[in-house]
Length: 377
Image (cartoon, rainbow, N blue to C red; front, side):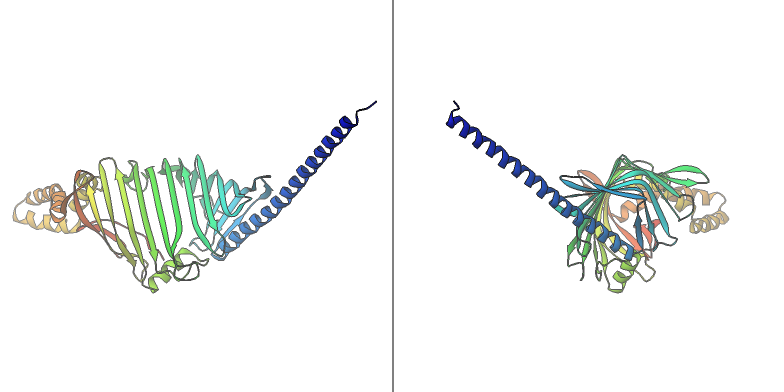
């Protein structure tokens, strides 16, 4: 004879298992529905960003696209990814093997992208001018396409080569690069102030300038003031609007170190009618002699047309006197700049504080020209 108590207990146990199984199925079905909803929202956000970029002349495409990542995130895999920047002159086309865009199901407004190299850059339909590769390349965008709040781009061990006559030239190498941008003041629709921060670790660019062949570290933070809005448009248009509004570029923090050379500074710059930088920064430099030697300033002064005229005049007075003056000018140039600057200390080391002046894009350290910056529009 069966025990009624035991039979009743087994029935209760079976009922509990049935209820538990029903709950599990309901949770799985509910979470699946939630994931599909979040995936749809994430895809809407991605398409919104693509549409926003298209208005600025930047078009993004995939050879093939798949969606995955269930159960905790949404992943959009884009193979044979490409981008065309039609607002550039000439237009540019970027191509890479794959791109993955990810969003957590509970945070679809934060998009994290991972890029797979190599990346080629050049004019559409032509062989690439640049080839880039890296160990890791990621970007993140927070906010909505209508109201973006911040964006970041991170590169580990990037290597960029320039193609010239079928040969690859070392354009840039670095251990780490970061670029961060955020809306610091105002709103996307009215008077936004954009903060941009750049970090370089062990970066070198020997093909750019001999002085950049030795690895350097840099941290630079700037504030862009005078923008009308942050609607989709090319940066050249933004800078032109900034110029019309009397805006400026504030360098709030800048620190660059290359071996024993160290420079820190800050100040404000504006744009002239030609789209070139105007203004002045105050910089403090440790190792000024080494910096001038690396930039080839002494040789530049010795070979300048004004020096040639002086040498000719002195040689007419006394043969050989001009060459003596040329050598003395080269030897004493750093001493003269040191005398013009303010003697101080930086991080416990002897330093000199000098103005770094920008005039129609030309850059002067004290009275000495050291380079030129490109037009921004």
